[in-house]
Length: 181
Figure 1 (tube, rainbow, N blue to C red):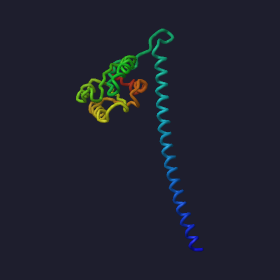
Figure 2: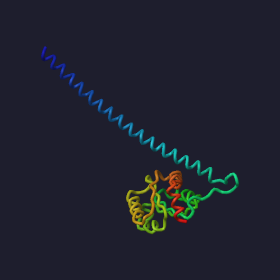
Figure 3: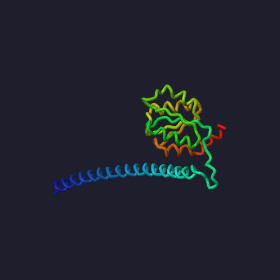
Figure 4: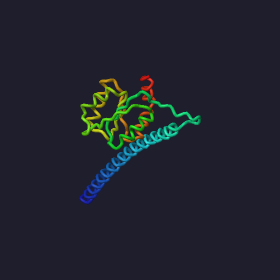
């Protein structure tokens, strides 16, 4: 009888250990899913903010009810965009033009030498770069050059027109235009 009870105890101990391990895996999976959901919620919120900025900009880009064109908000600012795909540059330049900002571009990679970046940063009032379309090395150099020159830089969520437009609509960026006057 003692041997039978010891055998059953060992069996239940193994079963308990297996269930504990299974519970730990389930808890880890739940924590991972919660983190993924929180990340997706942050991404969703960023996209909603960008969409709101685009909608506002589209409404403001046309003439007002009085027939007077909307006011430029970055007149006098020179923007340096570091990174992105070459086929996007024209679209990004168009966003800067709507804001009456000057536009310079540096590829942030193989097609443009990073040694040219210092000269471009010195000419810019604002440097932006998409974190999803720039090398880590180029981003680090751009940040370092901006800090040395006392220039503002904004890392963008993505290499999209919406991200650039949302960044340019920030009140702190509009303050740069006021300081440039």
